Length: 122
Image 1 (cartoon, helix red, strand yellow):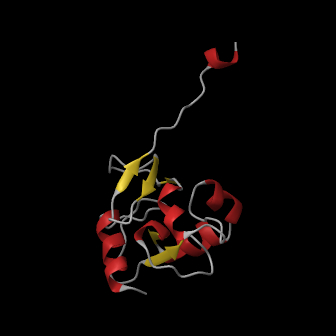
Image 2 (cartoon, rainbow, N blue to C red):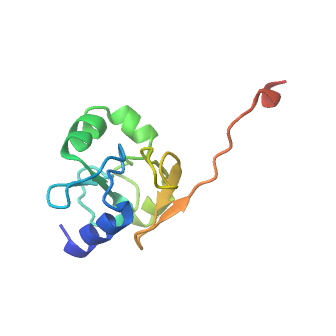
């Protein structure tokens, strides 16, 4: 694990689990690789999570994790990782509870999501 990438993801998450938004222990948090089986150490491929959120919330429910951006295709080129949005867990941070993309510079980039209204169906 690249220590600089891990530090960048830690700084980005501000000490909060990106899956559930609760406080992480700075010594024991997990770095989840969104692209399973590749171990490409990039901030856009990493999620800061509790060990239980990592194993139970992400790996035990891969369909939901894929739908919410926590797992991406193993065939996706690394330069496309930043284009896959993630639904961050809710919380006090204004980026929480909404869709963002993860940059390789350790930032969240908000994603505009069009939510259909009743008028869209009339």
